[in-house]
Amino acid sequence: MDLIVDSDIYTPCVDNNGNYIDKVPSFNNIKNGLRCPCGTRKDKTYDCSSYFSTHIKSQTHKRWLLDINANKKNFYTENVVLKETIHNQKLIIARLQKEIIIKSNAIDCLTEQWVLKNNLHVADVVEDLIIFD
Image (cartoon, rainbow, N blue to C red; front, side, top):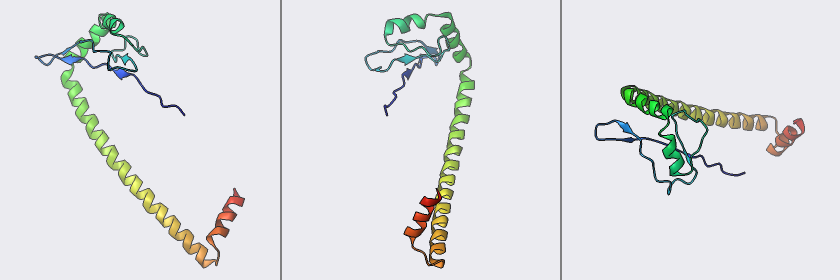
């Protein structure tokens, strides 16, 4: 099985006024290409600075940059909500994992009691289960 490495996602820089601006990143550290979330070419991966430089001059990309600058407050609020959602989901996952461990232990205990009650050996039960399959 091969490991699939995804391309990096472009993030615009922030100027001194807090506005997002385009700055073509150095492709020396970008090994798997760069994707832009602007939506101009959804699945396009850029692997050199000249192609990406041309891309950020497109009208769709420029509109996207204007939109994220106009909606900074909304993006921040959405980010806070998403962080809270992730935190809550982590708590739910941890609780469910704990329940699974408890129930698995209960199943093991009940299986052991059943084996002892019926004067069986664990190996006999495992063999019966294999035949049952």
